[in-house]
Image 1 (cartoon, rainbow over the protein chains, first blue to last red):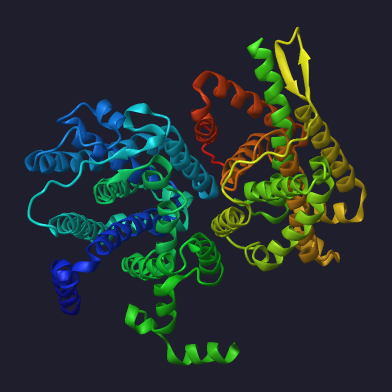
Image 2 (image 1 turned 180 degrees about the vertical axis):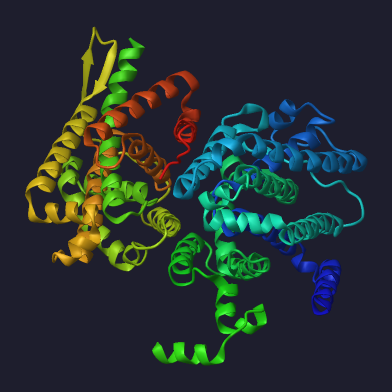
Length: 349
Length: 288
């Protein structure tokens, strides 16, 4: 426990000083925080509960649109804003910008949670691959439909309010970095807290055998919905921050981007090792570094690399980094290893 | 009149969907994998026909050339990737084929460019009911060819030795193995036949409609939807639900507008799944 505390303090200290130590990487670090949030929350479904969702992108995109719409709609007519396509006819004062952002983030987190609660009863009754395909359909449908709605920009996209001119050139990056970092800390604390309760055991019981869990008297549906709502809350929050960070929202390329974010969150969790607390975090970090390298040096070939990477990870590395470490050093994970038995197994191989 | 137009368009379109869905049902039943890259195989088949058109050969010959090439592409994909996911969890196969799908999309984007293309067959149009209903002859041609291929395949599956081996493997792969069926070969052939069917459908789509590297996923979702509505191994059901889906799409296009067409297809999938889930949950069962 003591060792863990030191680790947390180090990470927190690094997180708080990072934008000042590495000013050039502020945007990248913010994106990393968002990616970690997405991976960790996907892990609640995919890793702990055994419900492989492609649909968490729905809440991410919803949060993104909601945050930006609220931020604009609080002070200016939304339809005219999107009509002008980012022309600077309306300018937020700094106070308006931050007020709008604060309210927008709250809405962006709360509304997806409610949506998850409402659709959860219908969708989470599906199991296995039907759930996966259904949520995939949900994500793509949301993207296609939002691309047809005029008031949020339809096909031409939605420009989020530009950052007001306060606090110098660095202020924008620092603001969004700290937003995403605090969202990450909040997500981590919440998830760590709920993983240390009976809730995690119930989720694992659902993953291992849902029928038996039901027979034991667990109301599985209730816990599945709660798990999905927790995911939706943080996905929406991450989406809202990301929308402000990118500055431009397009229905299928930024918000409901099943081909990028929707796959990334699954891939990061699997790469790190699903069903562990730290796995998705490690996976997201490794993946982000890899991705940035590829996106920079092999521009144009990134999706080819992504496709190959998905196939290779899924086929050859399904246990992830944490799973591999666990196999290699079982003692570190608190497993008691019988030396004689282990040797016997090695010889058998 | 618009109703008749939409119905006829939908039925002709639906026959094409049913052909793709038949391939989906085949591999799902035999190998127990769900292939997200199905739609991308269709688009690749379409590009083969389109290239023949560019080089001055009539694109209708693509109906014969494209499945032959696609068969080998399918076998290649099987040997490289699919044979490692056959016995594993279905989600693994979904994710792995999703990777293949992304890979194919981008490679096709590099090779053929990101333009929406169409191979012009020059078949002209048929006018019905005093020119109120317009049917391009290419649509009638493609529906006819689809039915022809489907019938050939059904007869092949019933009569030939490989067809019998495929059906035996679908029923019980272990028993088939014990009785001397080389299941590995059967799987490869199944995937190849599926890819060939996609090739035919793609060639027909490139004549009748348009193709684009990123248009694959809707075809996958459509065929998945048709299969879950009809059930595995229910051929008349596949044909009927394919036509139903085609008519639905034409009406959605007409009533809601073209920008909501794909969205409504995906939404219909969600609704169908949710409907079946509630229907089964009354008996305390779930979709397996």
